[in-house]
Image 1 (tube, rainbow, N blue to C red):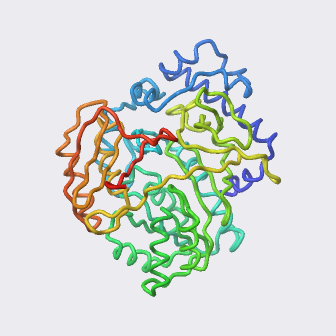
Image 2: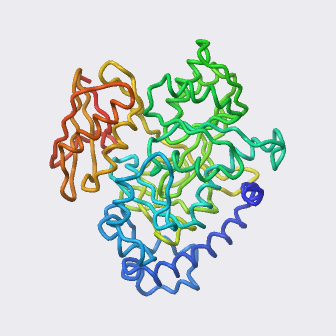
Image 3: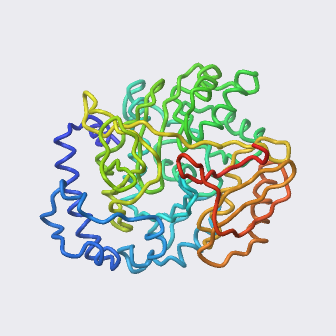
Length: 435
């Protein structure tokens, strides 16, 4: 971790030297071990490739990656059918696949399903980039290494195929980590948090705000020193509730299963991204770079440290606006158009929508999904790229909702297209009937 603290202050020149060195290694691994990348990167010399030439390489999409998964990865032991089985059977405890690989599953901002696999070295870097900003703030308060074991609570996804639920198992060497699945009944989440008495509180901002309300109402009595929400947009309303409830202003985190990590300090919407770990290109709908201050249609991400599953100019559909260079470091800065609809009322009870999404991730034939919530039923529209047992998918969602303390009639329907926002073109993951 101290080495990662130092990286936070790297200059633009230090980062460029590091990025070019890591990019060459990534390209060598990709062209040497991946048939998919060998075809698309034909003709390049990985060992002399210049950072400024990155924009000459073709773009890679999630659909490209998933449909060519076995040819994308660079380890012949890794096959999609085995990864899918691992994801399908994943429980709350993180278990490595073949004692070597850590798979993560994500729907992403667009709702299109993706599987991302890390080896031991890459998952350590992933976790370090995720945790280092919060740990640096904590180290500034108590020193490093800490004089005591850190008590951390993370409120996140229910199965260890999401970064929020995998992280606790990877942080256990230096912290006492309590994990509270966001799909638990809220009273159980309160009990877990109260028993842990965390000095650091992390996870979905919508759930942390609910905990802050519980604290304000006298149902909870904890004294966190730092609060680090992530995986959802930290809106002004949520930040205010968290600050009022706990007396601590939250920072904001952005993380993707693809390996892109960013953090914004308390009270700011300006994110600083880990440019030592990923290269970000902000582009318009024609893949042309946009100037500073202009909102990009999407972002092309190159993950510099995951050589097992190389993502090179990979399309990330989050809309961001690049910002000018910051004083004190050379890391990329940007604002983010946030992810919304994290909480929804189902069966008369407010639950986190991860209860729906996590159940659907277990079905590899579901490429994209959209949930329409009615007064007493859920209709889940799905786009398929393989066979899907819609009755089983509906049963899995219903069971997940029951575990969260609510119930509703669930129907899963295969469709040819999902409704998209007329302005952004994005699929709304959660729609409320009548709105």
